[in-house]
Figure (spheres, rainbow, N blue to C red):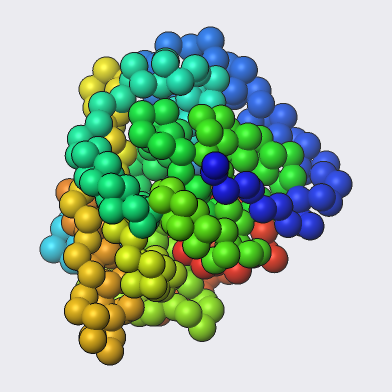
Length: 329
């Protein structure tokens, strides 16, 4: 049986006026995309993303700083083109995810192809569960939905949203195809239980971590504080670690890619957790370099520069009571 979701007291707070406005805006978009064909859903998402690119100067500047640091040999015009494409992509990510929330499992599968899913089957054949990882890249939320339909349900590590109405909507969508959601409180126990039952657990590894269990690894030749949870769990349980990426295809279709499992370091390596985390980060970086417009460049991934508190999140805020642990969110 899948691991049940873990709520926090924060989600029991009554919604504020702002929460209700945000919720109504999202529900309105859901109602609209339900009736639209996929090509129109993608077009609407592009318009939303480009509108944010035009009006959100703070995130536009942050994306440019990150892109110029990651690709020092690329011109400003090239970086701006990637940034514009990235904003458009994340608009499409929003509308496609909302469209999928209205679709049946059969309709979802008709929109996707799978590449390398036998690697997940091989991982489960070992009987130790599977740790799936990705980043804020491509259509990661879509992958979780269709993975449960085509393969097995997955337990998704997440942070609750501040907005209790959107939190409930997002959770119900994530669980639509049989997945479970695990929040930080009591997460390790639930994850271990899932792996012990030979289930899959999904985690994002590209968020900045401020807690003591963070490890610094190189990401685009810059040190980035990264969750050590994925490596620690893999080394503790022996569960294979499989990189997962969801890419767009022409015609409003999507390709779910399962890469080869990441080889763990030697058992006697005193720096095994950091080395394992670096190997996983290297796979993510490889995909971001291939498709730079599909990664969240407006995210403050590196904190080695002066903090700009005026730059908030692009999406509804996660709970401030849930410190960033590299969880899916």
